[in-house]
Image (cartoon, rainbow, N blue to C red; front, side):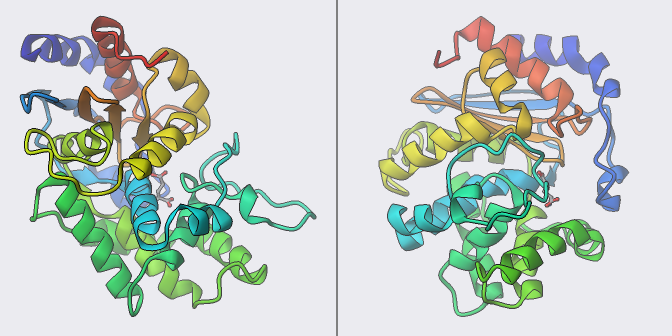
Length: 305
Ligand code: GLU
């Protein structure tokens, strides 16, 4: 396995240049575009890795499945489903999907920004900083890494420039879908996106989803199997932005990408995979990261199809 990962990293390293860094969050342009790393955790507890697997990057949208999980743990499936739908939008993650019809919860999706902003309001907590702290604790617990922190520079950068997310949040507020102060809700969302991880953290988190809510080896249960089922199903249909259908054909596993260049891929019952390469394709997915995953999936028969 180590050799296979090393070969894939060497093979796809030259393609890292073809991607573009996300530049709408200025701080995200300060990274090395040629980085490529992968970490895999298997059901026997063994780990394999190659390339820049130790580089840290902000999770960005990869926090969305964890945000959804916490909302499910806090409120149960019925209430979450009542507020945020589950259908793919087929549109970019920050699309202002609104014409003249009423904006209904079934038009929202937890993997695109408007749905994720709404999920922040559903978390338990006495204020938004408490809600965020609970999300951070869950992320640390799932990854087994108590050192996980927010990258303050990315958080500040996003808070300063995130006007499209402000527009989305104000739209939710104008429709009465959220009641709280927009800036408080967004502060939780921006901090959540700025949580920093590496490929190992993503692989460990992915493994818990792959193992239906249990840690590797010890099998300690962290959340009900039903919630892994719920989150994995949404990741399969909507986790890779409006490239999710293409990804399902090429790779065929539930996964979530973020504009920081990470991908967290879940191969049910078998593996958790974390990948990092910050050059993005036109949909916002890690370009070399998908290439590595596509070949890994072919070689190890990972596709659930
Ligand atoms: N913080 C980013 C935003 O809201 C997340 C985008 C992403 O990774 O998809 O614009």
